[in-house]
Image (cartoon, rainbow, N blue to C red; front, side):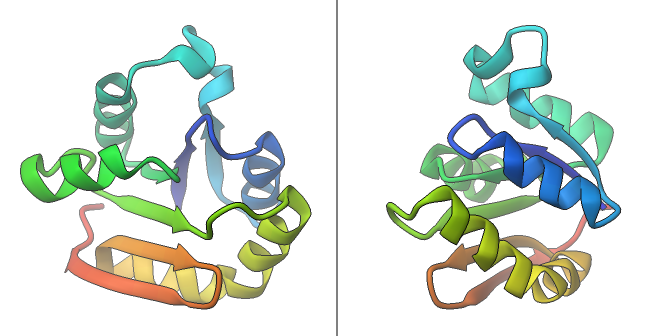
Length: 122
C-alpha cells in the first residue's frame, strides 16, 4: 500500500509504515516540505495512488465533496503523544490495511477503526 503522511503526524509514523512494508512519503520530504498546500498533497496522492494519512479535517471535506483525495485515512485520536499514536497504529495496522483495501475512507480514533466506505481506488 502507498501512503502520504501529512505534516501534523510524526515522521516516525512514516517510518513505522515503511518498516511494515509500505511505500511511504512524509510531507516533510516534498519540495515545499510541511508547507505543501493541501490541494497539492491531495493531487500528488491521487496521481501516485497514495492514501493521505492526516489529522486535518479539511481533507475529509475535500474527499466527501470533491473526491480528492480519493483515498483517506483520517486520524481522530485527539491530542495523544507520539509514542501512544505509534502504538495505536501498530495494534490496528492489519485492520487499517484491510479496511483501506476495500474502502476509500477510513478513520482511526483513539479506540477503534471506523470504515466510512466508498470503494477503494487503486
